[in-house]
Image (cartoon, rainbow, N blue to C red; front, side, top):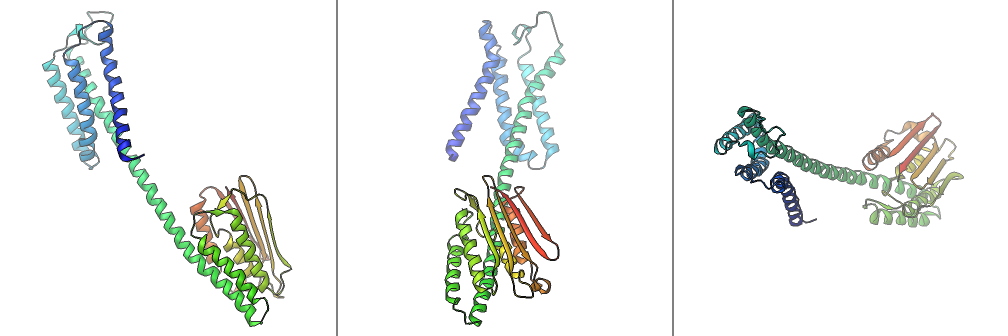
Length: 340
């Protein structure tokens, strides 16, 4: 909705409410064929003036300006002066009361009537003050959410810039290992890496990607790792479920998988990595398990990628994910559940 249309909509809402307000007070006089008291239209008009004067002037200038004492004193002075002037200019006439009591001789007393009149004048100030404070709170809350969203976006972008070099470094290490061995699989590995890099260049900057593309990326990555390993018999990848119409943030699982391959090789050169991904209608269950190899105990850089992914999960899935990491000394496992 554009700003002009929004202002027009607000204008008609206010107009409708004030029309109901006037109708409520004037209807009994038309219904009972009584003369409208000369002070009633003035009182009603003054209520509207007080409402908008407080809304547009007093609250922004004084109350929101942290001059609470001055604001309260000003409101009390306006109510007092307005009540005195109106009651002097238009003395109360019992026969012109809006709602006649059954006992026509009933008299509340002049002081009580004037006090009641002043309370009527305080109502628009009180209501407009509450309304303006709510509007300001709503504006500040919307602004806070925008700032928070921009902050989250900046943090995610920073985490991605950390993740991409980390992945590239690991992949180049894999190709280097093959080239040292003069393996015939080096060219095939480079092709696999190019597919992975293409995904990172064209998909990784998006907020979300189709789950099928992310699964294909994981499959290509696992294949690249199998090519560089001397023994990949215990490297397993299982994907089950229907990924159609589902989306996830790009590169969400790769840090867990990278760490599994990096630290999953034992003293004999065997690698044990088991990756399972179960896609359900409302949830996605990801689990990766690896044996703790020799590199894990000697590495000082372990966990950089894991910290990144934990931060991403905190930002992208607040209160809608469950992450359990288990380390029993021999096996390291990650169990992640996402609410889609």
